[in-house]
Structure formats: structure tokens, C-alpha cells
Image (cartoon, rainbow, N blue to C red; front, side):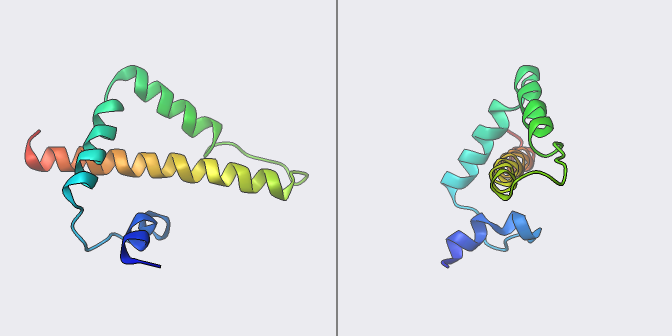
Length: 95
């Protein structure tokens, strides 16, 4: 696995990358932060959280369903992470 791929998935392990993000990555993070800064988009993100991360299944659920929902949870977690990175970056640069 390349260093770039390892950095992209570091949020799963809770590890913070020591590599500085490039300008494109920072701009993408800031774009996510801007898009999700409005009250309506916050409602959308809250809905995504409730329908993925906060969803609980019983013991009868299939492995395929668990894998599918785990992928959805990972995507929402990724979005939350990149939004936070964009907000932090914007605060540091005063944007």
C-alpha cells in the first residue's frame, strides 16, 4: 500500500497522519466544510448519521447486510472527518 493510500485510511485506526496535506486535499476539505456549514446541510448530515452509524440490527441480520451498512458507516465517518479537517484548516488560516 502506498503512503497516499495509508493516509487516506488513517482515520479508521484513529491515527493522525504526520504528512502535511497537499493544496488540493486542503481545498477539498474546505469545500466539504463550506457545503456542510449551513443548517439544511447539517440536517442532511444528521440524517446520514442516524440512518447509518446509529442504526442497530438484531442477531438475525445477514452478513451481507452488515457489510453493506458498514460501508455506509465508513462513508459517513469519512465525510465527518474531512469536514472537520476543512473547518480546522479554515480556522487556522482565518478563512
